[in-house]
Image (cartoon, rainbow, N blue to C red; front, side):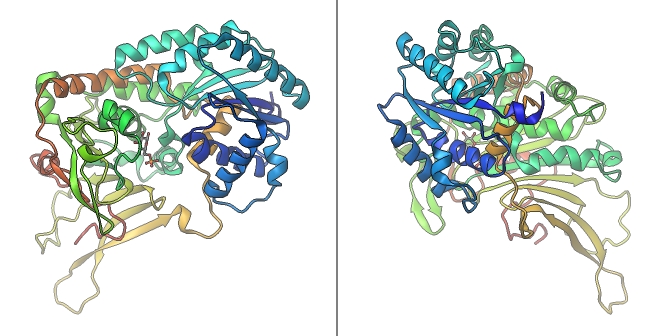
Length: 502
Ligand code: BG6
């Protein structure tokens, strides 16, 4: 089937009145339409509990695009919004699905969408299973075109619950029809990891334990939990960020080159990484993982409260808002190379960075200073998307002795005029419409990553935490520094404008 045919579809968004639809989905559909990446033959059915009308949804869509789409409108906004229809639905009620069924059929005819249906569940995960069952029972998935299910995380809260949910969904959708979103996989520079590694002869030969000493991945946020206290307090940073985004980045950094760039080949290499990752036993958790919770402090010059004072968070909560960990991959390529990860809320900066630290040379001819200056490859995922290679060169002085100075080879993707990299959601929606599962997580990945984090969760749930243990506006608790320093390394700075070498 060609691309044009694939992009003819009805997109049914459950949770259309919610935050994700407003901030990400509507603006992404708009940008895809403006870029003519979806056919003119598309319709969106916004589904929600509230009794909205088509007009109300359309106004809402226009507002959300004006607020969140970062490009000037190049298509008629009213014409675009007329592709949106609203269906009020109670997720437990059979009749609501029957109404949705009629609307789908009607729009199928009107827009000639060939029966292609994309069901996007942008809502609380406890309804995923129920909705999928109703979609099947009321005939919505019985269509002549393709049917696909897109679901947001969290996919379960541990291995057992994820397995149960998966079994439920599999009664209606095949594995290749389930698109589990990990929005990090839609990011430009996360997708670039593969290309930087496998399209450059200078990196691949060095990409192993002979030349790399350690890899550090930081995803820090300056915001706190905002309005999400209810969800977050049950989740914590381990489930919210580590089980998915952080481990996915590790897999892309550590995997073997796939023999072809097909979703299956890439996935099977990622799975091998998760299989080779050392499974930490409960009693070993303190040796490998550190948790933290923010106390009050400062954020951009303003006083901010601690996690326990946030709305919908119990005042004695022991939920972690920060995790640092040391991951080991026991295979020939990576034995002995720690992958350090850290992520948290209310940290000093909003940044996502990968720093690959190369080993020192066997002998340092120019050793004149106490400062350690290994070569670093820095992949910046946020805020500036780019790569930087830190090298040493000769310092231009008249001194008798040759002195070295650090230099940087820098490439910033989104700093150049005219390059506006698509948003993660825009890419992922497009891929889903094309039937490309490469940047979605397969059940095998989800199941293995839960099995890797579950012992950590269990240990933490059983043991006491001395919280809060880091001040808002810092880079986390001192134990996170000790975790890496005991191996003889240090966290490289990640804040923009901050020098790696002070
Ligand atoms: C989400 C988490 O998956 O990722 C949030 O649920 C977190 O808590 C967000 O803030 C971070 O994503 P990004 O793209 O802003 O780094």
